[in-house]
Structure formats: C-alpha cells, structure tokens
Length: 116
Image (cartoon, rainbow, N blue to C red):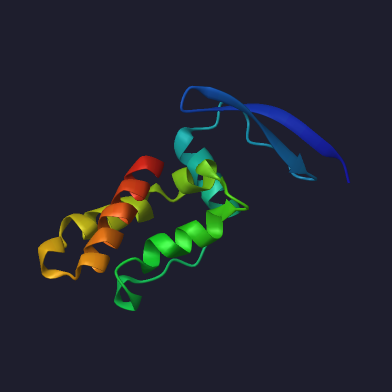
C-alpha cells in the first residue's frame, strides 16, 4: 500500500492530506466536495436533544476530542450540527433552570461558540 501526500487548501490555510491507497482530492475540487469528503472521514453518531439538552455537543466532543486534542477539521465538517446545537441553546431560557443547569448551559454555549 502506498502513501500519497498532497497539499490541500481549506479556509485559506494550507495543510497536508495523507491518503493511504486512495487519491487525495484534486486541488481544483470544490469546497463543497471537499467538505463532503471530510465529513465522511469524521463520522460521529450525534445525540438527539431529546436525550438531553447537551447530548448533541457531548457526542461531538466524544467523537472529536482525544487526550485533550481537538480535531477542528472534523468539527468544521459537522458545522451544521454545531450550529443546530447553538440555536437550541439560544432558544433555551436559562432563567428557568437550576443554578447548576444554567451554569452548564453557559459553559457549553461558550465552548461550542469558541469551537465554531
């Protein structure tokens, strides 16, 4: 099995894509096609809000944070899920929650917004 390293540009920054036995995306590939390719390599089972307010964000964190290192590329590939989670938090009234639940909401909102 051969390894091919090809440069790929995303959001104005250069990075390397390592593909084992698979061709890397051509440099002329559209951002949409590249985002779809990256999403396929960053799979995660998203938690549904009915499982708890923070279940979707928890699933993203469990899937894309290892040993304290955040895989921002995978978070970017799941930007719609992160946006949906933030929209859910924006519709949530922290004033009706216990102090601890409201604190969790604000901490998670800050963390999700920062990653986004």
